[in-house]
Image 1: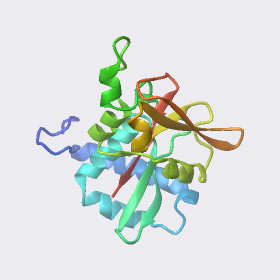
Image 2: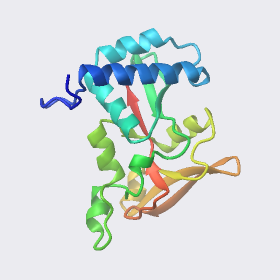
Image 3: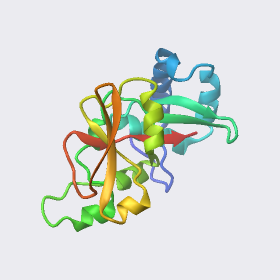
Length: 193
């Protein structure tokens, strides 16, 4: 069996890749029960098995260093919620500006990509400030790095974007030009299955 993505329009993994990501997610789930008390892995896996495209999105989260894990369950929508749970902002998603408009506005020293474009390509959503704060209740994240978060339209229209980190046992929200990028700033995402 090849270890490449299929050539169809859908983003899918090979059987071997699916088995690998499922096993990795199961192991992480079992090691971090405090993130999802009361949830059963068998139910999560059943949802994953039914949706190869979501498996691909989780594989992309993993490939870029996000260490995705289940952090909750939405009963109303019958969806399990995964967030990037890496200790620091995912390494494979750093040094990016906020969005396509910001990327195109740079005249010199453009980053390779933008956070919003990368998230869309991966099939995930960038965490909102509220979601970022929820994640921080599960542990201490971004103690040395920072992460772009979904920026309200009124701030973005004025050229800005917001990011968060954790310092001094406190979650901080900051602003920057949306076209800025730093080696220690990436983004965290969420995916519902």
